[in-house]
Amino acid sequence: MKYLVLSLAILGLAACTGQNYDTELAQENQWEQLGLKDGETGRLIRSEKDLARLHTLNENAVAEYNVGYKMGIEQYCLPFNTYKQGKKGTQYTGQCLNTSHERLAVQGWETGYKEYIAEHDMLWLNNE
Picture: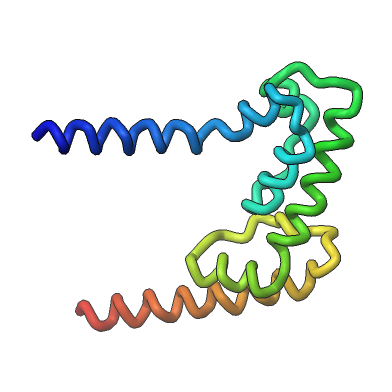
C-alpha cells in the first residue's frame, strides 16, 4: 500500500511538470523555445494577448515566439508527421496553412485519417 501511494504521488508530480512548459518558458523569457514547442505539437499560433497572459512581454517576445513557431510548425507539417497524426485520429484544424508543405501535409493527414477510419470501421464490424 505504501508503494502504491508513493507511485501515485510520483506520477502526479510528473504530470504536473509537463503541463506547464508554456508558463515556465514564458517566465524565463524563452519565447522562441515556447514557439518551437507550440509548433512542434501542432498547436495553433498564440496571439500577443495569449502570450501576455503567460508573462510580461519584452520588446522582442512576439517576434521571437513567431520565429520559433515557424520552425516548429514546419517540422510538424512534414507530410510523414501529418500522416501519423491522421492515423492516430487527430483532427486537422488548419495548422499547416501557409507552410512550405501545406498541400502535401494536408494530403498526408487525409491519407492517415482515412486509414484510421477504415481500421475503426473494421473493428466496429467485427464486434457486431
